[in-house]
Length: 194
Image (cartoon, rainbow, N blue to C red; front, side, top):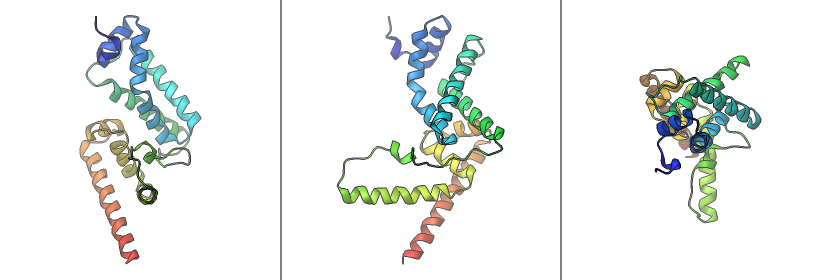
């Protein structure tokens, strides 16, 4: 008998649909950090992120129990699309577009692993992160969104296109323009420092 925690997502879903609650708990534990953090990056409010996260998994459970889950895609992509759509719906209800900005509570650079270096290296890295964060913050919302989804959520451009409901070329173009804009900001800063 195969260890349940080693099963693929589709096998866990099949077991859950056959009544094995532990299978869904394993599936949830695999992806809860990634999904919650992605929600938080969009709404910038811990309580709201927790509420939306719960709504996402209620919708997932409901869809699975009704037998409406489509096995064509990966589970995590499907779950991320539900989370993204709920965040967008929240912002639409509140007459705002989904913006991704760092807050005092959470910073995208907190999730990046760093080696234990000396104080001088830590200070330089911190200043560099602050500068990059300001540059990313100053990007247009669509470009900022693609940068965060690509580099934080580690999503492919195909996944980003599906999630944001644009073509792959549009997602690639937004990333290209984001990089051009960041490069331009870096050159302008360098010119000011000289």
